Length: 95
Image (cartoon, rainbow, N blue to C red; front, side, top):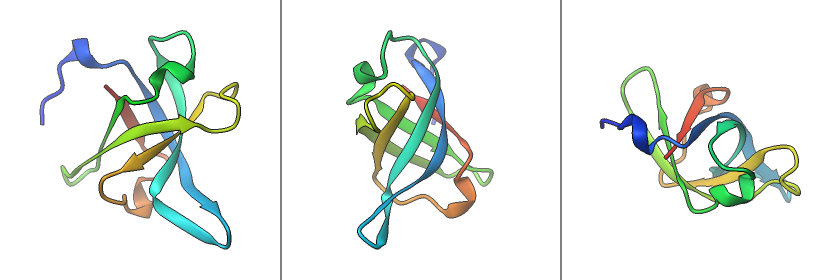
């Protein structure tokens, strides 16, 4: 899947799965946004996320909300397929 450079808004680092209530939600990820072209991370809600692993598999998802009040540049993304644990700490592209 080719990504044009003009559609790339930024990237983030996958921090962890969303946890709570005695369980872990593997389809929801907490992503720390490192670089983005908008003024606030609130403006990234609804944008798509792409994650590629070393085998060439592509995982896609969508940013659904901010994590906390948005001051720490963390967002929560819902993935179509849950990602393996080896991808925690990997780069996520925001398009």
